[in-house]
Image (cartoon, rainbow, N blue to C red):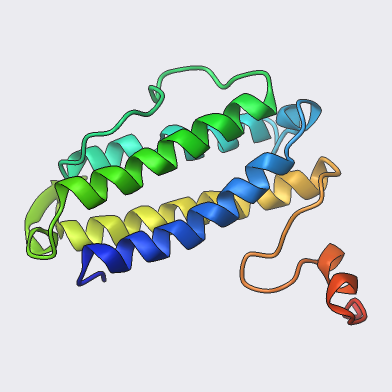
Length: 167
């Protein structure tokens, strides 16, 4: 968990930069990539990364601008990437301006459970990483190159002067 506001901001800046790179790589056509029958397409997963923060973070008392969770995903990938860029910056400002290290230990009701604000921030990050994983799989299926979050993606091995690992 996070013991300081700055430790969350540092971690979130790193994770949101990775998410932003993926969203910036999307194409308008890729947004229609299906998961499976009865599941949302890639565009919905990408859009969920833009507005999903309103649930947990608002429950922790943070106030910031973000698209409504009930809004439909844009048809243009650039609009999703731009909205994420603005929302993630809003989150950083809200955390910096509205939380203190002491406040991180306050308990809030989250989904019927009692979490500290620190736990809420930690789980929010895990939630984003979870959906980012879904996004990368759908991007590959749509023919969009991905970046490695915690190590090189297949497309990146040559850039670091190494052979692509054998399958």
